[in-house]
Length: 283
Image 1: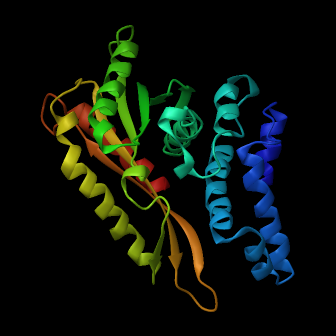
Image 2 (image 1 turned 180 degrees about the vertical axis):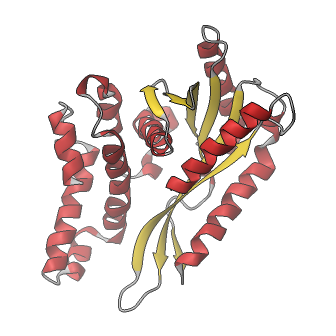
């Protein structure tokens, strides 16, 4: 986390008095108190909720730092990096009507970009994400879903935004990334499990439930150049261990490929399958 902060400072993105700073401070204290066997005292100072959010949210910033730290300075998306640092400390304090959701929306776009980069894509822009994979140009539209009533609108808005970019580049391929955390009912909860082996099946149930309900939205073709919808799921889990339980952020990216495995669409199908499998392998 400190390395991420130093990197941001080096590219002239200040973190002082931001949400990043608010997350970094308790992480430093966790290390210091743990080294002195005073964790219980720290819990009394902050409470469990603030501490586990600080631990788990730090992973987003670390991942973005790892993905983009070696990029040349002039291609860093400084405006987005600055925006991702702001916003409410807790994601459940976001309010669509208060206009404070864009900060975490931007964080999600950068998280998605980092995943595509880890999957072997060359990132070429940040609107929401542009990249090249296997000599094919892609544009990604990212949506954090805040309400089940708005899922259809969000999907169609993403398709419309992609179409606007495709008009000047007719061979452009599209992907829609959806963050479904706010629809899972687990945003303010800790998933209690006895073994890490339980994580994947539980996350798969969440993704499959969403797909069963909504996949018809994109399989009634929005645009034949849109090749897949990716679902991002994040859940905090408490794994029972001795002598102390282990707290971790569990992540999964499920994908639903749109092209059919037939003669007309086989190239698109094979391309998107390879890309999605690479991204899943990087989680």
